[in-house]
Image (cartoon, rainbow, N blue to C red; front, side):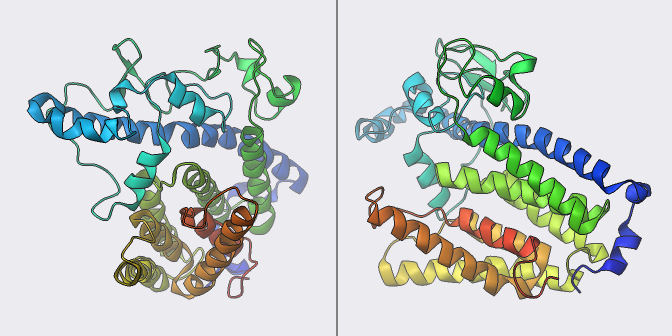
Length: 364
């Protein structure tokens, strides 16, 4: 049973009597703050996963297998432990002012392999690593903490650590005119766009669902979809640390039929995974190459858990159509080859957003 007005009362909070203008302003401020954090997630999470993969490779190198590993690097892929600041700048030129450490870059080629590997989305973790998951090697070999909270944001070009007033969502970008205050390097407009998108999402959820649990749940869903879309379009990667919690959250929120009934949610999760799994193997048998990544299976399963199995055909259709338009447009413009992979997870996020916004049939 889709979300209805009667469920608003049962899910409602004591704040439902507040003036709409106040609610929308608070929602916009919340969206800007969360959007700023999403920029950190989008920028750092792939790097953290790449560092985990590098750590998993270390025992093989130190136990006499270097001769088997080094040819990969000689063929054009450098040792992750030796990746320098040049790789980081190539990644950050598409990003903006969020900071990072040299030597923890995420080469695009490795992200693609990680996402499309049929065995697993994440490499196996070594039980005897000498460093913790939050410690990464810096350029001088020291182990330093690197996660979503540390180090503080800094300019990727000059290393200038952002002051508090330089890190205010959207406003700082406008005041600084899109430039670093220290070196005047360009800050990508993607960062304020993500913050504005999160703010608009928060206002839309407040206006559609009122101040209620479905509003907060819909906002959380939209934020995770935004992060997944941006990570996938940059790195061809859909992290388990985002897709799997999203799946479980969809099942939990539908125990009270927030967006659909629990039976439809469970069937939707299973059908979403199995449907793309079958497409994957059919494409592999016919074309002798992989056409999807395992992360796509999990993402569609999460969408099915949120909206039920009924939404899956239209969401997949929207993803296929928009993905095809994207690929054809770039191919015609000469920006990509015909055989280049398409970040299908990004377009699954588009289809799920259309479902959340009520633009597809079956969700009033």
